[in-house]
Image (tube, rainbow over all chains, first blue to last red; front, side):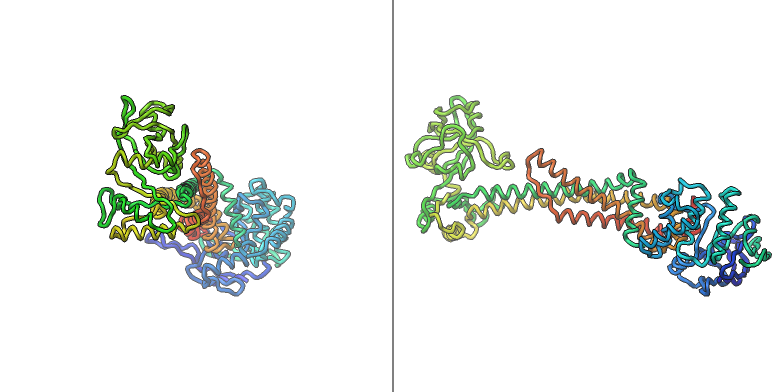
Length: 228
Length: 402
């Protein structure tokens, strides 16, 4: 499903070359729940941007369900983000001026779904994340945990093959974090591939497999329990 | 992203920054409003002048006059300055012509007791009020008998009476013109349309043409009023008369009938209003351009403010084209709303001018459609740069932007 082969990312800073990711290779199978664990500065975010088709590796190949995305044009990449990837961000990144329902509808607007189909799917998803009574609320009227639930519902809108979560609990208290991670686990059990990027070992503990990243290198993989 | 969705987004963004959007569209609004108002009042004024000129034409009468000088005071080759007795006799021989009355115009000193004034003296037939456009306020107009009998009578305009006597109650008194005392039988007021009144007004003394010929035997007629047998084609006869007179004067440029004269005035009025409209219109276009620059400025601010929104949209699958179109729509929405409100305001201003001054107005739908389209084009042009900037954002940096 995800195949990274010798992926490197380097930036030219003045005369020096800064290596953020060095020779990273790993595979994530469909239906897995994987955590990318690493301290800040380990290159997690850069890796997440590459996995999310927002950035391109300097070297190496990245195949997403058989497609080498490093060879795709920007227009195709937008389509891949829309259809195959669902993002969940640390700071939720909901549009502040539109309701929870409209936020969930956004990816489906770019997928050219009809108004009625969007509305039905958005209501279904918000119900799935337990927010059926908050459809018309603006993000400012929601708690942190509720906002993250809306963001997760939005990420699932177009039936993505990969749910990509970047520090999804970074802005939440421990109780809410637990609830959100439970939600990810439930979603994974229904067949969604989940990749969580975190520095928090407690968060990573929800995953079935951990990939540890330090200074832009994979330093270890650990199978925590059988694949669910 | 379909059009309806983009319109919704644009509307939402406009509503969120309502005051800012209104201030931004103000430039476009004022520009469009002034164009609409100027064209409405200009067209209305032109139409009013033309229609009063048209309606003032007399039935069964042809007015023939020497063709106007191209350069005042400088006669052209073949130019005729006045109408001779021969010309009058020539016209009298035509079939269909009932009567030919010469009309005289000149400036003379008129005295009444100790006071005197330089006034316009006009000599003509008893239906002079129709030709010179005045009406009798007090007393009566001189009669056909007065004309036939070379009687020493005069009608004074209100202006002339007040200049000579300080009052308009002067019936029965006398004024002296060229040494000849004349009895005042009537007081007249001009019926020229209000627009022309100021230009052509002033004191005038009207006398029978026969009386004037007696006092000033060497004056030549400056116009002739030709009576026509009812049922005759006035325009055809007028053309034949003018042709005959021109042949007689050995010039194609000597005479014209008043329809040609009117057409000339209409053309002149049209030219003047078109030039005025063009000049004021270009000033209003500057307002539109300034307004467009304001829109571009606000759109640039908006793109910067909403960097994170752009990043989020891109991460959710918005292509660069979709972002570009979104911001273009917003900019066009602002200018088109401004244009629409400007059309309403412009029409309201024109109506206000109409109420205040009684000048007619003609709101032209072509100008409305054109200015609406123009404001859309301004939105498009002024939105391209900011929208392009928005679409070129790096999604990673845009997402990080706080």
